[in-house]
Amino acid sequence: MNHRYSERICSTQKSFIREILKVTADPEIISFAGGLPNPNLIDDEGIQNAAAALLKEDGKTALQYSTTEGHPPLREWIAERYRTRYGLSVDADQILITNGSQQCLDLVGKVYLDKGDSVVVEDPGYLGAIQSFSMFQPEFLSVSLNEEGPDLEQLADVLNTSSPKFMYGIPNSQNPSGITYSENRRRDLAAILCESDVPFIEDDAYGELQFDGVARRPVSAYMDGEGVLTGSFSKIFSPGMRMGWVCAPAEVMDKVLIAKQASDLHSNYLSQRILSKYLETNDINAHIAVINEEYRKRAEWMVSRMEECFPDDVSFTRPTGGMFVWLTLPEGVSSTRLFDAALKQKVAILPGTPFYADGGGESTARINFSNSDEEQIMTGIKIVADVLEEIRIT
Ligand code: PMP
View 1 (cartoon, protein in one colour):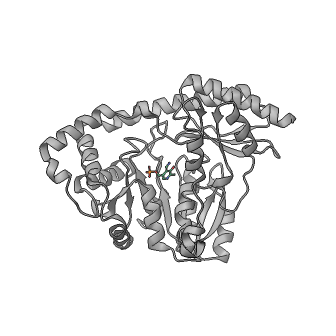
View 2 (cartoon, protein in one colour; view 1 turned 60 degrees about the vertical axis):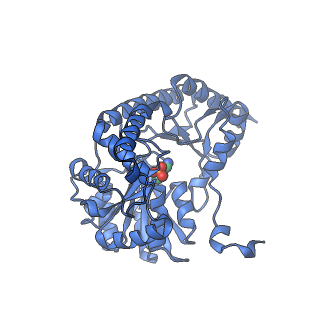
View 3 (cartoon, helix red, strand yellow; view 1 turned 180 degrees about the horizontal axis):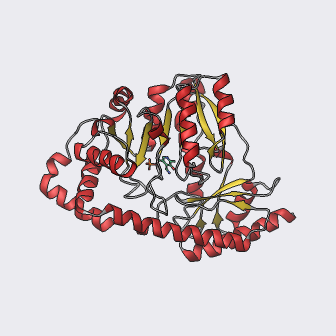
């Protein structure tokens, strides 16, 4: 029956994470598998007040169709944040509001990719981006990440032998590895990409989730305003409202606008208006500081429990932001086996293999800390450690 369907849909995999989340949705399971923001840190009361005030004051307009680019005050708020937080000279015209930042990846794919084009991705890379770009049937060129960011020698080799349409990366608390690019690496990466005239699609979903509160200079800032940045309100406001944005220079924005119009006319206008009202009437900086402090504590509990329970030949990252710890098991120990065995004990982790566009990563796993409390972390990590010992012996 496949002849009925497009090549693009037949060649794209279902999201492994979304499939796993169905299995781990059982409330009895301690789940480190997902990537959910902590529900206790969603300001539902503030959002309820903003929504009620908005509907009372301007309900009929807020429930109407709107412009493709998005609500002007919201675009201006985002542009202003780039100016004050990152020192970038961004203007509201460069911002388009999307339905979550995931939609940016689809729009970017539509704007840049034809079948058979190549794109550079991080190895491991964000699964949602690999899936989104797969719809355009590109060739993925993977570049490994090390502690400071992408391996630039590998990148130079890739750029010597191919002409990718763009490179996609997540410089702040990368999903899945948790790595944050160093400042030097950002600068050198920008230089290499500029020299080869390859745009950087900079996914900054975790830019505000930095435990030290420091705003790290985007790679795009070293590229003479040529970079394309994507951002999200999911982790600092609400993922269910589906509010994200793309920030791009005028020429790119012109194309993004066409893709967006064809896709869905405009992003959920009611969500945009509620968000905008919320930002007017609440101190989002104070809210972000609370989230960061809560996540910092959770990351610390998780890392110290891992240090206590895991054998020395298991390594793991020490996150300075974001929502994940990245685990590397001893060679030959499969994280899929660990996943199966831990799930029987009602703890879920996420095997790392789907994050590798070219295969590999059998001994890696992603562990989420944002959505568990101290007790779940203490109990869950001990169970993972015990199960790991068991599967090594058998
Ligand atoms: N980029 C990255 C790196 C992510 O981790 C996620 C979601 N976890 C997204 C984009 C998409 O997020 P959203 O659509 O909710 O903004």
